[in-house]
Amino acid sequence: MCKNERYAFFIDIDGTLMCNKIIPEKNHRAIKEAREKGHLVFINTARGKLSASNVAGEVDVDGLISGLGGCIVYNGEKIRSERISTEELAGLVDHFLEKKINFVFEGEEIFAGVYDEWDDFEDLTSGEEFIEKYSDYVIAKVFMPGILPEDEQKYLSERYNFFQHGHYAEFAPKGCSKADGIEFVSRHFGIDLSHCVAMGDSANDIDMLRRAGIAVAMGNATDEVKAISTFVTCDAKDGGVAEGILKIINK
Image (cartoon, rainbow, N blue to C red):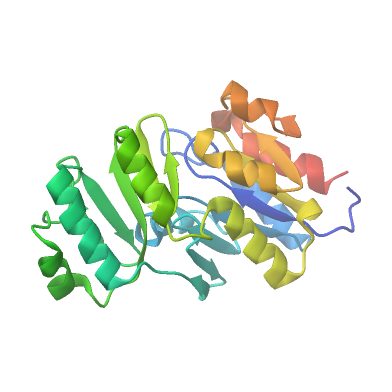
C-alpha cells in the first residue's frame, strides 16, 4: 500500500460513515485528503437513490452507488442505471397485496408501495394503479420489513438478487448488489479489485466486504463482519472511516 498507488473507497452509510445521523468531522477531512491525493471515494448503500442522495449531499465524495448497485452516479452523471420492468413491478404489487406483505419500491426519483411506517407516499391499491402513476419512473430496489416466509424467500430468490436480513428483506435485479457496484466501478475506472476498499459494519455489507481487496470493519461492526475483514478501526461515531482511509493512503 504505497503512497503512489490509487485506491477506490466504498463506504456504507448507517453505522459506518455516520452514526445517529451525524458524520464525524474526521471523516470529512479524511475523505477530502484521499480525493486530493487522487483516490476515488464512493458511498455504497442499499438505499434507493432518492433516499441516499440526501446523505451523499452532506459529504464531498466522487460518487454514489445506490439501490443495491442498480444506480451509480459519478461526478453528478449517471454511469449505471438498472431497472425492474413496469410489468414486473405491477405484478409484484398484486402479488404482495394478495400475500399481505408490506413493501416499498425505492426508485431513483420516487417511493411507492404499502407500508404504514412510511408516510412518504400513498399506499398502492393494485398493479394497474402502479402502471397508471409510476410507469415512467426507474425502480430497481424493493424493501420489505420483517422476515418473509420461506416460500416467499424462495419465490423472490429465483427471480431477483434477494437478501433476507435480520429484520427486513430487500432485492434488486439479478446482477445488482453492493458487491457488483464495486466491480462495475473497478472495471469502469481500471482500478484492480485489490485496490478497492470496502467499509462497513453489518450483515448487508458482507457481500461487498468479501468482493473488495481490502475489507475494513468499524469497531461497532458485528462479529461476523469483523471476522471477514482485513482490519478493524474504531467505532463509527469516533471516525472509524477516517481511521481506515488514513491507514491505507498514508502507508
